[in-house]
Image (cartoon, rainbow, N blue to C red; front, side):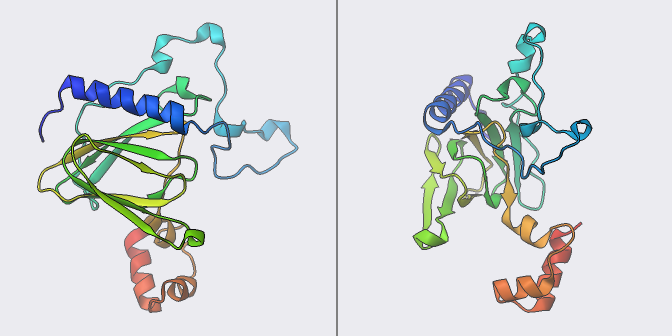
Length: 225
């Protein structure tokens, strides 16, 4: 893969940070999938799952992450690797409503259809050529919006919309992504539907996807544990 020069890398991060903070900042809001009410204070969990450090103990490292310039291994079933930089590895992002990621794509690799329940996504192509798209909601007719992106191009995926990226080139590709949430969450459609724990009743999925039950069961074995 062509080495990304430091100027392009810095510009990419600055552009993503500015765009995300100005246009997409979305938190505060629930950053967990659910929060069940409980009366017993011994078993309480703070909303958003984080405690706040004593300000007097805060240090520069709480706002720092290194290594986003390093290519990741894409030798897997989908041919991509997502490196998240969120509140889990930069504690100082807590309550700030932003995060980002690096995505490496093998030749003809993809980031399969998925959705982020808590954030809009803005993507910057640093290397390669990507075919990207998202599908609107049922209320908007499930319209497909696609675009072929080249180095230097930017694309936005609205919050909650199912979207994907596919490297249509014969060389590796790299993209950087900004989120309007400190923890956007990811729901990969195939993994979620066919790989749930425990599995969804195959008859439900067979009817929903208009498939034979045995096909559904094969898919559940493929995506399951």
